[in-house]
Length: 240
Image 1: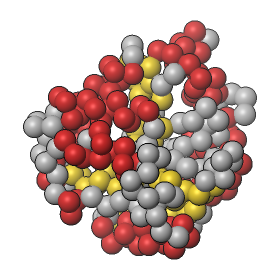
Image 2 (image 1 turned 180 degrees about the horizontal axis):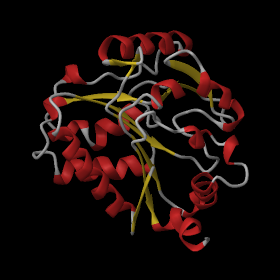
Image 3 (image 1 turned 45 degrees about the vertical axis):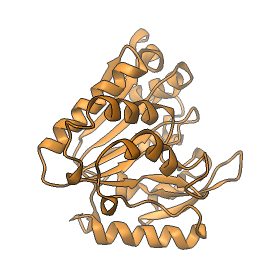
């Protein structure tokens, strides 16, 4: 595990974006699972503004690690956010974009998208393998759309499952632990003081860390990078 601490959300975005660029330059084709949330939005803005012409987007295949079960025009759609902040601003073939159809029946879509991963991704250990999985972490320690109250979904035998947000009841389609931990690289992007306690518990393996889905992120390749800002890292830095 590598912990990269940046001064701000913007400098974190730059750090991640340039490492992403290096990754694309090292491969003929790269399969990437994207995340929703406020931090990826800043990353997408940086990529669009500074690296849109520097990256060969024809190499890049975009997927989503999780998606809310809403239409693609809905403000809550992770796909819409990515289109607004990145896809609409770069030259990437439409055939390179594999969205979760959030407008479909959730259970049927989890099965369909799981098949998409089987068909499109190379296999390692007979499991679809992403080159990069982007993840965030919620204040409750959830990642992708696997929440503490349904942490058992992490160990599902399926590529994708339907999760339910514990407060809103919103249905979501999410990849599972077997897909996340089979990735060549996993990047966890975490910002803000509200994440500090959970981040410390997970990094230092203290308290209730085992109950947080984000603590289960442990790729077999050991290529796990936490990109965090000073606010999120403050308890990791200040406490021995």
